[in-house]
Structure formats: structure tokens, C-alpha cells
Amino acid sequence: MKIDKNTINKIARLSRIKLDDKESEDYIKDLNSILDWVEQLNEVNTENVEPLSNISSSILPKREDISNDTNSSEEILENAPDKLEGFFAVPKVVE
Amino acid sequence: MNDLIKGKKYDWEMVIGLEIHAQVKSNSKLFSSSSTKFGSSPNSQVSLVDAAMPGMLPVINKYCVEQAVKTGVGLNAKINNYSVFDRKNYFYADLPQGYQISQYKYPIVGEGKVTIDFKDGTSKDIRIVRLHLEQDAGKSLHDQNPSKTYVDLNRSGVALMEIVSEPDIRTPDEAGMYISKIRSILMYLDTCDGNMQEGSLRADVNISVRKPGDEYGTRCEIKNLNSIKFIKQAINYEAKRQIEILESGGSIEQNTMLFNTSTGKTRPMRNKEEAHDYRYFPDPDLLPLEISKEEIGKIKSSIPELPDELKNKFIETYKLSNYDASVLTAEKQTSDYFNETINSDPELKNHAKIVVNWITSELFSLLNKNNQDLNNSPVSPENLGQLIKLISTNEISGKIAKDVLEDMFSSGKTARQIVDEKGLQQVTDQGEIAKVIDEVIAENPKMVEQYLAGKDKLLGFFVGQAMKLTKGKANPKMLNDILKQKLNKKN
Image (cartoon, chains in turn blue, red):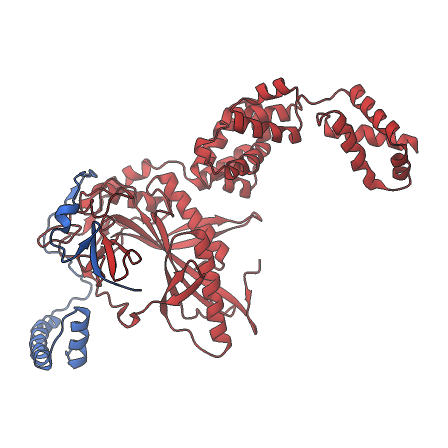
């Protein structure tokens, strides 16, 4: 797989990152060299091997269904750039 | 059954599949200990995990996992010992993480099926593709402020079960019956409260149309419908829209649609070019979810009687029709009420069909009229049982019983009390009825003449007059029989 101008633009758009032409060129180079390096793994035969989703051998820890009844609103809204009537206020999203 | 709809040129068949989102009935969220209570003040139930503060880690709620397994069993589905949580990536103001934790390739529950029952006694299986666990997003309010969207994260992180069906549904009615059946199973299992108004149960509908026998057409997805009425409306509108396009030579563009509940129309969502690039990948914060056979067995053994089992039991024990039994078992409160009524007197077991009718038509219509629920019905199962016994022993007529029920409903008195106080016992004395009829015949000689000349319809007039004289208490069958006898003798 090769990263071209279109791919880099798409990735940038999906990540909501704005790149100028110079940055695009740099990233194309960087990402391609990373991909080339990872390509080496294709030399390994992985037929009939399930993809590994985690390298840890421990078991998923679970919690009991107990809710804490603390009111979080003040703390949660503390970092919000804009808040109104207890809500986060964001630019109008019309869908 | 003809499920086709007519276009201007051809007949078309709808192909429909549903993705149902059912909120797990739990105290705390899927990956945090915040409360799931509905209707609390905005952002009051948001932990640092739900707000996606840096460095926070999700820890799964054991109870939610068990409820998903339980629901899977209720859907006759395969439970997977191994499942994986993935990140579904997209940006939206009410999704603080920038991704939803969901399950993609390895869901917790695999293929299953549910059965829907039609009025004509037939039934149909709808296959389930999968059920997976995922987080709900927050809520955006667009209409509170002219220039801002408000975001409330209370719902953010609440556990959802997404139940995906195969495209086995062919009509809007079937879609309605399917979601009702799923709702019913969830409520029997007590894994979801089934409250569609509060959004605890909502659906995305996938729909395409085709000429019968053709391959599937291109489908559109209508998002986020939260009532059965809207689901049917949206399907009807969308099918018509697609047929019009196809019949005028156009083609359907695969699209995500929104349904406007006030106009009854669907329209495509904007921003569609990036809509489906979710870049799923396994969430590195969560290990795979493994459930042992023992745990699954334990959950299986805790499952209560489900609507289909109960339905079969009712059919067998009380000789009810498939449809009656399915109406009775659709909601747990109805089947509970029926059980209590029919068990209140040993006599009633022989009159099961009458018991069904009195619950599902008479009592339901009174409850509806008064905006009440069976759970807090002013008429208890025992009292309804007593009323039905009075009918089955011919002590009162069915017609009078309706008035008695209304009285019971508003006064809270028992059937016995009302019948005794008002003297409503049916007149079953042959002599007494005959006497009244003689009176009616004597008072209306002209009518008798006309009747005998062939005007059969007048029989109803005589019945009415005689009933009036007995204040509606004469046994209707006896009255009819004796009346006919007497009139014919005149001939």
C-alpha cells in the first residue's frame, strides 16, 4: 500500500487536521516509510492464525453494577469553552 | 397473503431489515459508575470516563454483559464465548471520545430468530444476525438556542444492545410486529424497560424495493425512529419515494435518511461522503470479553418463562387460538392478569375464551378511555373473574355485564355488590318472560300483523320492547325463543 496525496487528504479530513502542501508532502514521506517498514511482516505466513487483539494474557476485569450518585455537572463543565444552562454550548450542528 | 404494493407501472415488494437499539436496564453505565437515571438535570451523571478526560480507562459492567447474554438466549441465539470491543470512529459534538466503543467482528451474540404471529393464525420467523454491546452517545439539543447546539452527556456511555435482523421483513405491519415482539421479549426478560418514548428502545430501518423474484435493490437507512407508528410511516413514505424514482427510470442512491415526524417525510442526511468510514479497530483499552460455558449455563437457568412458551401453554391448557394467545402474552402484565383472573375461580377454566374477550376488549377499552394501565386497573383480576362467573352461570346477561364493568371501574365495587344493589339478576323464569311478551303482543296489534305479513325485521322491535319492560334483564336467548314461538302461533 502506498500513501498518495488523495489518501493523506482523506486521513487529514477524517482526523479534522488541516495540512498545508509542505506538511502533506512530509507526511506522505513519513507514513510511506512507516508502511514500508511494517510491510516486512508480510514475509511471515499468517494463514490460519487469528489476528491478535491484545498481547496481555490477563482476563478482562469487570465491575459490579453500582452507581455513584454524585452530581458531576460543575466539575464536568469546568473546562468547557462555552456552557449555558448546564449544557455544553457548541456551534450549531444542523443535521 | 399479498404483500405487494402497487406503483404506477408495476407491483413492488418491500425488503426491510431493522437495527434495534435497546438500552440495558442497569443502574450504572457500560464502562463507568455514573447513574443511568432518565430525566436528571443536564450533565449531572457524567464521570471523567464518560467525558473522555485524558488517561481515563473503561471498566466493563458485569451486569450489562449478563443482560446481553440473557437477551441472546431469549432471541434463541448463539452466545459467543469470545467477543471483542472495537472503536467506531466518527466526530460529533455529543461523542466526547471521538469514537464509540462497540463490537464489530466478534459480537457477544450471534444468529438467532424470533417469531411473529398474524391475525389469521399463521406466523413467520424473522432471523437475527447478531446482538452486540455498545455505548450510547450524549444528546444534542438543536432547538434551545438560535446560534448554539446544547450538549447533555448524561446518556453518554449508557449500555445499548444493538439487535440486527436479516432483511426478512416485507411489510410495515411486519416491521411493527417484529419490534413489538422484541420489546415483549426484552420486557419479560427485564433486560430493557422497553420505553420507546424515553428512547430506551429505538430503531434504524433499512429498506429497499424490488419486483417480486428480483435481486435485492439498493437500500436506504432511516435513522433513529422511536415509535412503531413512525416506523410504519417512514417505511411507507420511503418505499413510495423509491418506487417513484425507479418507475421514472432513475436509480436509488444508497443513503442515510432522517424522518421528519411532523411532515411524515424522509430526507437524506448531509455530509454523506464521509458517513461510512468508521475505521473500526480493536479498542486497546479493553481485553477481549470471555464468558465461560458455566456462566452462560447459569444465566440460562435464570431465564423466566418467555412469551412464546407461555403462548403455547395457553393454547394447550385453555384451547385458545394462536392469535388470542399471542395477544395475551404480548405484554407480561396482560398474561399475569389473565393468569390471576382465570385462577380466581375453578369454573372459569372452562370459559377461557370469554375471559380473554373481557380482558382484551372490554377492560382494555375502558383502560384506554381513562388513560390507565393494566398495572393499576381499578378492576382487580378477582373481581373480573367474579363478573365473568356471573355471566357464565346466566345470572346476568353479557349486555348488562358491560354496564356492571363500567360501574366496577368507576366505583371500585365488586360485581356481586353492584348486581345485588341494583337488582340486575337476569330473568330466566319462562312464565315471567312469557307474560311480558304477551303484553307486548297485545299492545302492538298492527306490528304483529305486519310481522306476520312477512316483515321479519320487526322481530327486533318486539325484542326491544320486551327488554325495555324487563329493564334489560330478560335472558336474551329465552326471550327470542319464546317470542318466536308466540308470534308463529298467531299465524
